[in-house]
Image (cartoon, rainbow over all chains, first blue to last red; front, side):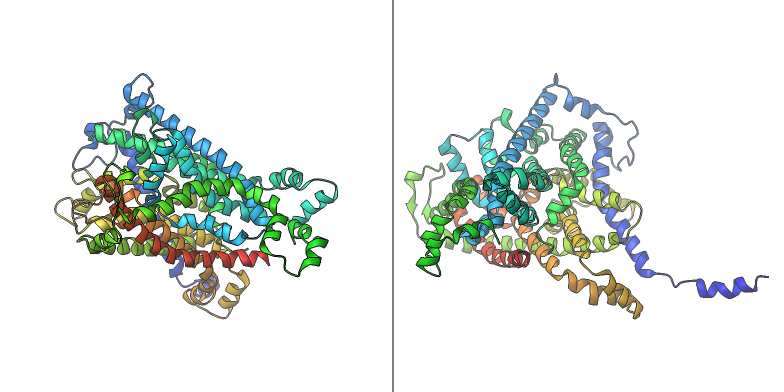
Length: 293
Length: 319
């Protein structure tokens, strides 16, 4: 009989969980907010110039084309040649910044984590406070300094500058990782006859490789995305990095929106891929230090 | 205990005094400094010198070509010029609106996203990754994409507004004094809310599960559970997140610089873009330096709280 079923149903039925539905609604909204602009960028980049400049807009490209991408990646084309050169410049500058940054930050972070020398706290926070100052404050003096060093219009000026605004963060991140490596490991190595430097190189360095990866992603992405110093220090076309170079496309071909969107897309690909592959480290680096252990 | 302190407690220093003076302690730790030295040299050259230089420059009237031999002592003239200039008031108001609104909405959206993603479900990792992409790509890319979305003739947002019947013709978001600043703030929020999300997600993991369950058993509503159990645990993380967002927003230049250049008629100028324009646009180096020093002082006040919030974490870990 159905009496048991009709009896049980009202007891089993839960009240509608409004909070859960509110959460779902919110997640839908925020996903649309975050992804639709990127989707529109991609859709525009595969339209012809004619199709992009229509009102009302073509919601879905009627005749999708990869022309913009082919143009940008073709080394025989003038635009492609420029774009690929900017790409190479960006890569060179970001790579050099990352490697040098790690080489300088690792010993400093280690010292801040392990040693108790006088002035440690002061030095540590003077390093951190650098993050508080806006790029613009340093632009004029650094521009003069670079001119004096003869580095204006060279990639050296950018590497040196990116190094400094990457350093405080790198030191801070790495220090967090070193703090979490038990000091007993080094002490054991010291007892076994290793020098302090050997203990650092052979015990601590391998253990802190996640920290080094995290720090490297951060400085690479930071350098890759940097705009204002590159814009100010470089005026020679063959030296420009991508963020600045893209602006040139924009002013010269003011109406080529599909081309610009394609260039923007290609510029974002390396950092997004890097982020997706090393997401765990990236998130760890972001939250390190802010969330108490 | 560290290796270094163990070594410093040599018989010599133990005999001479309970607390050896700074120099002998520095000498005992001399090799420690070698580790920090490369970082310090780089920082000194590229940070200490520019700060000193900016402060010096702010007291001089300088020729446009930056030939510094020709600079003339001007006392506080640059400061009074900046503070009494006609646009300073509006630009300051813009800066406050930009910083506070961006920070507030990024934080609220980020917290909401973190709470909605806290529960385990299929595709959660993918959602988080997608939400974070705007934060990872360059602000330059964000600026161009949104400039296209806001385009006065072919922009998709304007077209949508017409299709849905909000307006009769596309809105000119960026060329309108009333809408420009809010339009830029939306772009900024788009870019950085996921930073707040990641921070708050990490914070949520520190909330003890048992407390929440206990509250649930006691019949607390979801709101009460959030407000009385979850939120108090998030206080520390929230403070650091808000501070970091404020500093980042205060210092951010790219979005207004690329999208509007401060226009129309200064309606989207914030301090940073204004300083850049004074220096590299009008070559008023002295005034720009004075402006930068003012900004500096404001940042120092913010920085004080920033360092305080961070040291708490640092000290907690040392113990």
